[in-house]
Length: 246
Image 1 (tube, rainbow, N blue to C red):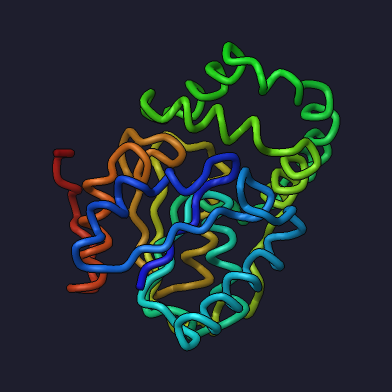
Image 2 (image 1 turned 120 degrees about the vertical axis):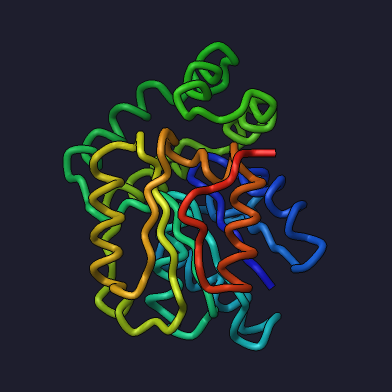
């Protein structure tokens, strides 16, 4: 059983291609995070979203799964899950999770998104935002549809949570073997966060992915992502050089 948690402002299709490649050997669950289109729940906090997923695992799978992965906001929620329940999974794959709070970014979210929220329903503006994410173009229609389905209050709530999240001391107690990935072209705060997570989980291998932007690994390189998950589960290791995309 594998659970993969998508990035903020995205949805389950973040991991669709990787899940399809893994589905011959594993059951892959792709939850929609709170506050996102079709989630059925408003976003309250990273902590509560993590607790809801833990309750789901407890009720449906006897309290643990094989692997939990997450990108960005999903990576923060995955880290929070590990903090709240130390033995919730055997392996964890954390991609581009921010754990260094930014007071300035937090303070700007409400006024900036309050002023420009209406623009997200215009395709030209959504296309500009989409291009800045470096996501493959064939996902634009789903991105646009789901972004339009996020309420202003939910978008502000999960963006503020993303900007203010920090690791809990209890993360050090988790028993999962964790693997950390960050793109070589990501901003400094994300790269510094990866180092901070590695310090909190000293047995966790960290890999910087050359020439990749935020989220590219799981979204644009699903073949490599799926193969990495397989190698983690089967061998407990990650290839030094990721093979060419097929």
